Image (cartoon, rainbow, N blue to C red; front, side):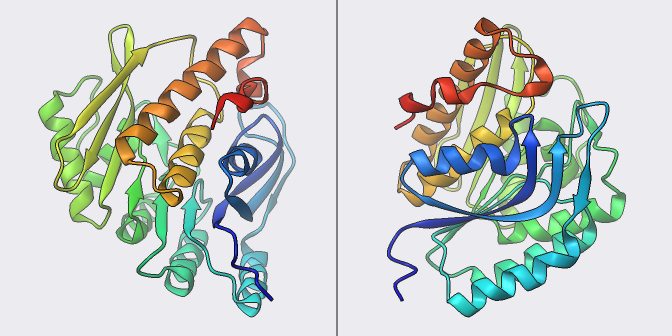
Length: 275
């Protein structure tokens, strides 16, 4: 059985039926970039938590039996990508997954979904933040926003940092394991910027004009492009530029179509342009 003839990425994240985020976004984006996406759900939502009401099923107990079937099949992954993790138990399961499936050749991309606007998400405990610090040691590529970069480096959050401070954060994060870090969502007046740092290379600031307000799922789109590009050998800075440009295009289309903020971005309308 040749299960490993095509490039594959294991995507460990939650599944939302509506609202365009996490697995529902990663799957089509990774697929159009010619990589097979293999989801491992951490929980199931009817629609994401940004809505007033939602159905939720915790998948923690089912994750190990699910993973065991992949082991039986002898699956090998060129990439492993992780997103929102709901508990310290789930973070431990993911660390075990890395131990079982990480090789010297594959690439681990961790999007440490922990908080935004200077605060951790309500589900995140201090204990989970400590576990997440252990998890990022396995990452090759890390994609935190400013808040998450602060939490992971124990640097107090503030509205504005100097570029030298972003460099210090990125260096601190790389000391923990990753070779490449992109700190996203840096607000600079009318621009939004990503700080792109690669061990041993000159850092790059990638800016684009801010459009609209933040929507659910844009971070998932960004991480999915970074993941598929990494597996496809696209240079990191080029990939960050491509992901930023595509997210902006998605937001503009969503404004044009008057899509409610809760419903994420209508990336389907522009997906064909992502090659």
